[in-house]
Length: 220
Image (cartoon, rainbow, N blue to C red; front, side, top):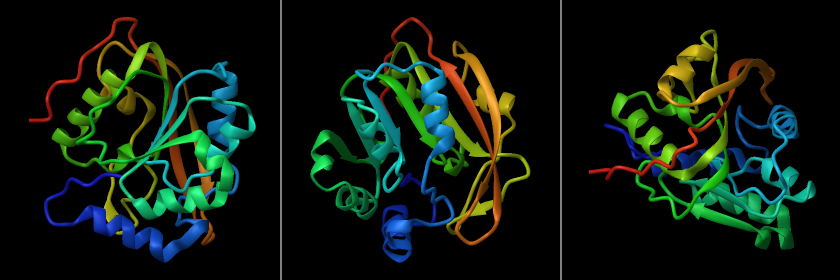
């Protein structure tokens, strides 16, 4: 998740949320991240591709990637508690993952990734400057020709999640928000059943990054 905001200590907010919901997660919880796995397989992502799951704290995608033999996996989240939940669940296999406790909007990427996966982080960025910074980090982090898989709430999705406002996107709106140069490989809708019995509509897109490396402007 993210930390920047005007009135809320979002680091503390997400630590509290993850402490409260525990290992089964909140409304975002999926016992099996079927859409993510299906898209990764459909895109033919090689097992040695450097993969980063941003905002992936307690998500079970990392379990699936390990099981499928991916060898270069990073998970980034602002919540130490969320990362601890995944580490505890994985046991000894957690040592095969790079765990990054970082505010994405303050993060300086250490290298290039061939796949950037984001399920339900970007829609928490409701301020234009937050989205601009995210895109700068994304472009600096993806290798030329690298892949992006992203999911946000659809236009008929909730207006708030976990006590925070969110943005909602149609596929083209999401592509436009990420800026020029990306090639859209497809878009999909998912009706996610929450543990509480509600349905949350998601917009998914898969994009390919430009074939030219891009630097990350200073966050200042």
